[in-house]
Image 1 (tube, rainbow, N blue to C red):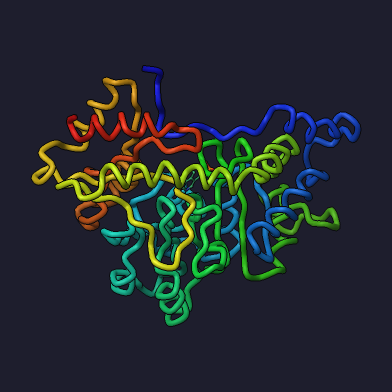
Image 2 (image 1 turned 90 degrees about the horizontal axis):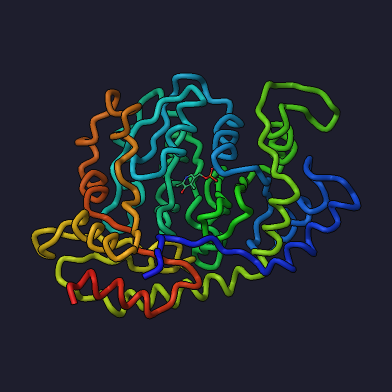
Length: 368
Ligand SMILES: *Cc1c(COP(=O)(O)O)cnc(C)c1O
C-alpha cells in the first residue's frame, strides 16, 4: 500500500494559485504588508468574525511576539501545560520567563482549570493554555481566574482554526490568541500564523514588532525581530480560505467514519466533540488502555507502520521530558498528562483520506 501519513497538506488548484501570485510580477512587491497580505488579513477577519488580527511568517514567532508585547517582568512565571508542541514552552523561555506546568483534564486534554490556583505565586504573571486537537479550554473559568488574580491570558490556539464556541470564534477569547497556518494545519499559508487580540491598539505595535521594531513613522522604539508574512504565503492563504468550509466538511466525514468503526471498543477512548462547539476536526486522537485493550499504544503504532500507515504519537514526549527541560522539571507532577502522552495516538486525518483507508486502519487496530 502507498504510504499514508497522519496528515496531508491541503493545496488549492495550481491555476488558482498562479492567478493569485501573477500580480506580483507587475508590482514586484513580495513582502512588507503587500496587497495580497492586506487582502488575506481582511478576508480572515470577515471569515472568522474577529476584530483584530495580525499576520506573521509562522505561529511560533507570533506567539513569541504576543508574550513580548505584554512587557512582563523577566523571571515571571507563566502557567501552561506540558501536553503541547515545544513551541509553546520555548516561546515562554525565549522571553526570559519561567514556564510552570499545570496538569491537564483527561477528557479534553487541555489545562485542568481546577489545578491552576494552587500554582499561582506572587511571581505568576500570565497563563498560557493550549487548545488541543480542536478541543477548547474552559475559557469561561480561565477568564474568572485571570480576573481574580489580575493575570493575562494568551492562548496557543494553533489547533483550533475555525472552531466556534456558542457561535463565536474561539480566537475572541483571552487577551491574545495565536494560531498557526503551518502546512500541516487545518488552514495553511505554507508557513504562517496570526495573532488575535482584544486591544485594537496592538495592531500598530504588532506591525512594528514583526518588522525589527520599526513603527509607522520609521522610528524604532524597541528592539525586535523580523516575522513578516510574505505575498506568496498570503496568496496560498487566500486560495485555501476559499475552500476552507469544504475542507472542514471533508474532515468531518473522516472523523465520523472513525467514530462509527471504533466507538464502543473496549479499552479505547475517542475524542468527543465538546458541547456548544463547532469543531474543525483537526486531529483524531485515540487513547489506549493497555489492560483493557490488550495492546499498547506503541504496539498499535508499529502494526500500522508495518502496513505503511504512519500515525503520530502526538504529543509525546511531554515538553517537560525533552532533554532541555528534563533536568528542570519532573513530569511526575503532571501525572495525567504523563499517562496520556504514553497512551495516545493520532490517526491519519485529512480531507482527501478515503473512507476505505479509514476502514483498513480501523481493521488493523481491531485486529481484524
Ligand atoms: C504548530 C504549532 C505551533 C507552532 O506553529 P508554527 O506555525 O509551526 O510555528 C505552536 N503550538 C502548537 C500547539 C502547534 O501545534
